[in-house]
Image 1 (cartoon, rainbow, N blue to C red):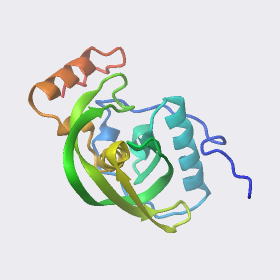
Image 2 (image 1 turned 135 degrees about the vertical axis):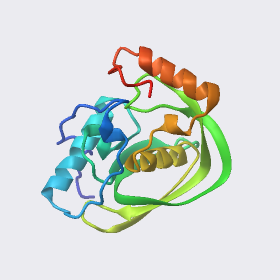
Image 3 (image 1 turned 60 degrees about the horizontal axis):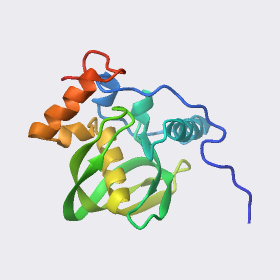
Image 4 (image 1 turned 180 degrees about the vertical axis):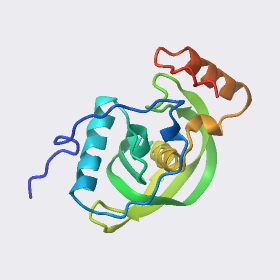
Amino acid sequence: MRPRTIPGSTGRPRPLRLLGDPALTEPCQDVAAFDDELARLIEDMYATMYAARGVGLAANQIGVPLRVFVYDCPDDEDRRHLGHLVNPRLVETDGPVVRGPEGCLSLPGIEAGTPRHDHAVVEGVSATGEPRTVTGTGFFARCLQHECDHLAGGLYVDRLTGLRRRRALRAAARAPWAAGESGR
């Protein structure tokens, strides 16, 4: 078996963008160059996700407006899913819509019951341009949908309504990391 490095082991953690940062609300652009710079970005994204103890991270969460995300996420059967997708597109969601706890590295410490489909399929490519299709169920399906939302300029709180939304935004406004614009 060929020795491989652990994803993120050669990367450096970058500062996370938090709720209120315009980088999180703009749709990301497709990646055009599959080069060493993209490989470094992906390594830095893994390092950032692990440092923040997350299960997924989109490039715009570190201020890079490109359609890339990384993940190291279990599903409901506790099977580990580890990888990255470049230029991903959510191509299918089905199954029951489940309201489950969801958080975000861009809203640290805040969780809310968020509705998501129980099954998701995302198509994209690898860092070298090879086609990839990733299928997820349960918690991993939630992660895939969450990261695709980020790349479209959305946050999980955008899917909340009524009291759940007001509570999450109020908690964000009072959070120690709040930048003053989190109550949007």
